[in-house]
Image (cartoon, rainbow, N blue to C red; front, side, top):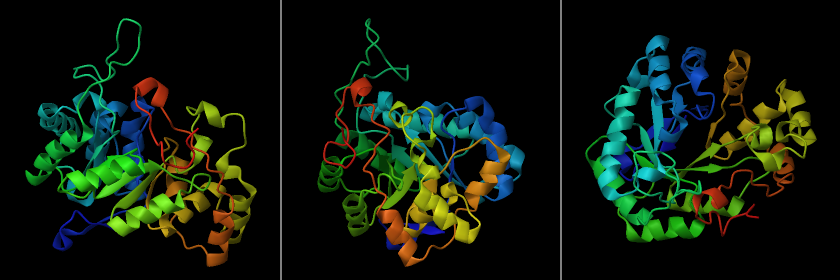
Length: 312
């Protein structure tokens, strides 16, 4: 278990180090969430844009695991950044998740889309219609729903260092967590150190890097989880490369969010929580390729990650 600090030392609480990601395969998520909870997961990550919140709710219900034992994260989508839209957005997520509170509510991206009932508002040419809401104002609206108890903690995702520094300077509540792409091929040590200094917990999405077929830039190379260094370290523990990648993240003090709909892999990923030797961590630090696979800058009308490693 890892600690998340929501800004009040007396209210620091724990989150399971291995979370269950529910991005993609919406039709498979109900069964996958049930399987994950029965296997022992207690940390479920979803988002409005995934379209999986109702399936997550059904999966939780059919698992029989009480709500209070589960750490649930969901995310505010870009079409609801206007301050007047934030509370209706969290209310819609709470309704779909069949819960009256979230453990963690994240701003999915700093980039606003035009206000719309459509998740991906587009112009006549099919291009995303961007909005003009400042993410600072969005965050201040998130602070309000946090203070109302609709989310026990609030955080961010996919921010650059400059964007995060500005948020810290101009707002009241320090983000409890920052969910970012992070894996042994994109280690971002100085950025993760900055989070430690500020008391912001890191959640790693895509902890297996280019294992996800959606990342076109990762198709022309071998898979991270087959990296010889990870595979070789794993042999000592009877673990595979994927489990070693998870162990590296957890030992760095982060929570990791692998996703799978395959029962055997769901169980395998939960077994990525084991201790590596300092010399093995050194070997892993040497395979950092500064390779970022997720950058929708061109589609979203916002230049992401401008001051971070892996920016092309």
